[in-house]
Image (cartoon, rainbow, N blue to C red; front, top):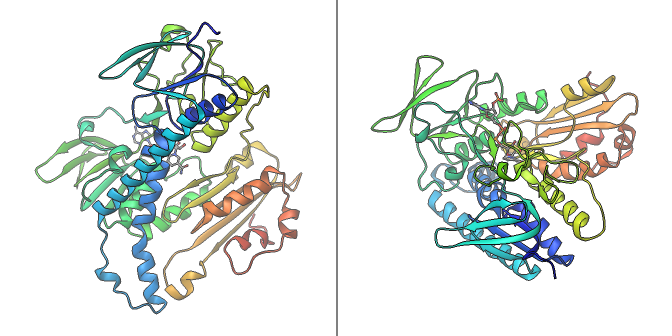
Amino acid sequence: MSQYDYDLFVVGAGSGGVRAGRMSAGFGARVGMCEDMRVGGTCVMRGCVPKKLLVYGAHFHEEIEDARAYGWNVDAKSATLDWPHLIAKKDAELQRLEGVYHSILGNAGVELLNGRGKLIDAHTIEVASDTDRKTVTAEKILITTGGWPSMPDIPGIEHVITSNEALDLKDLPGRMVIVGGGYIAVEFAGVFNGAGVEVTEIIRAPNILRGFDEDVRNHLRAEMEKKGITIRSETVIDSIERTAGGYTLTVNGGEVLETDLVMYATGRTPKTDNLGLEDVGIEIDRARAIVVDDHYQTSVENIYALGDVTNRVNLTPVALAEGMALANSLYNNTPTTMDYDFIPSAVFSHPPIGSVGLTEEQAQKEMGPIDVYVSTFKPMKHTLSGRDEKGLMKLIVEQKTDRVVGLHMVGPDTPEIAQGFAVAMKAGATKAHFDATVGIHPTAAEELVTMREKTR
Ligand code: NDP
C-alpha cells in the first residue's frame, strides 16, 4: 500500500481537473478531488455553457422578424423576452449538468471533497469548508483552480458586476455599459443588445478583440454597431459613482456618462491566491500563473498544473486535452505532450466569429511572403429577409508551401464551419487542396473552397 491517501489529488473540479481526475481513476489511480464552488468550473457553471444558452435566447427576435419577411404571420413588434424565464431555464440546465458531473466522477471512482484546497507541504493538502476541515495526503497533486475576473482598481469599482453576475441578472436594465473589448465583453454586448438593453461598450484601445485578425475586428465591430451597440474607443473610466437611479461614470478625465448597470470584462487572473503555492516552492509568474513545463510539471516535481491557472491557451477544450495528456502520461504508460498549433476558436458574438491559425498580421511577422484571400458576402437567408448583415471569409496562405495557415470568418454558423476546416488545416491542407474540394451549394462555407482571386 502507498504511504499516501491518494495517488493523485486534484484541487479544482473544472473542465481540466475533472477530465484529468476521472481518466487517471480509469487507468487505476486512486484519485481524490476538492472543489469549494460548483462542480463543472468556469465553463459549465460561469462561462461557455450558460453564456451560449443566453446567446441563443437573446437572438430569437431576429428570427421572428426574418420569419415575417418569409411570409409568417407573426407580430415581431409585440414579441418580448421573458428574461427571468430564460434565467430559470438556464439555471435548471446547469443543475442538471452539475448532477451529470457528480455522477461521472462517482462512476469513475473519484472521491470528491467539498472545500477549498490549500497545500501544507508537497504531499499534504488541507481541504476546508465552512463546516469541515480535513487533511489528506497524495503522491502527486494537480492544481486546476482556473481563473477569476480581474478589474482595475478605480474608485467605485465595487459597484460593477462581472460575467459571473451578468449570467444571473434577475432583471434587465434599460441601459448598460460593458467595459472591455475581449471575448467576454463582445459576447455579452451581443446578448444584452439582443435582449433589448441599450448597450455601450467602452474600450481603452482603438478597436475590439486585440489579437484577432484586423479584418475580423473591423467587420465584427461594424456589424455590432449596425445592430445598435455603441462602441466607444480610446475611453478610459476614471471613476464610478452610484446615483439614485443608476451609475455615473467619469471618463477620459472629465466627461460624464449615465447608465443603469456597469459590467467589467477586463480579463481574468489565474486563481492562485491562498493555495499555499509559494510556501511549497511553486513558481508563479508575473501574471500570477503557475509556471509549468511541457508535461504540466511545476517547479515542485510531484505537483502539476494545467488549464487557465497556467494562463497559456485559456480555452476549455485545451484544458480537456491537457488533462487527458497528463492522465495518459502519469497512469497509462503513454507519455503525451500537447500540440498547440492550429487550435480553432470561436467568439459567440452576434454575429459570431470562427477562426483557425494565424492572423494576417501574425503570418506577416512569422512567415515569408503570404497570399491573402478575403470575401464579404450577404448570407442567402438575408436576400429575402432584407436584414442588413454581411459575412466575412478570409484565408491566409504561405506562398512557399501553399499551406493554408489562417482561416477567419464572421457570420452565422462560422464556429460550426471552423471545426471541420481545423481538421484539414491540422493535417496540413494547402490552397490547392481547398481549390480541389468541391463546394456544397448553396452554403456560406463553399466560399472557402471557391476563392480564386487573391485580395493581396
Ligand atoms: P480578454 O483578455 O480577452 O480581454 C480583456 C479586455 O479587457 C481587452 O479588451 C483589454 O483591452 C481590456 N482591459 C484589460 N485591462 C483593462 C483595464 N484596466 N481597463 C480597461 N480595459 C481593460 O479577457 P476576457 O475577460 O474577455 O476573457 C478572458 C479569457 O476567457 C479569454 O482570453 C479567453 O481565453 C476566454 N474566453 C473564451 C471564450 C470563447 O472561446 N468563446 C469566451 C469567453 C472567454 P486591451 O485590448 O486594450 O488590452
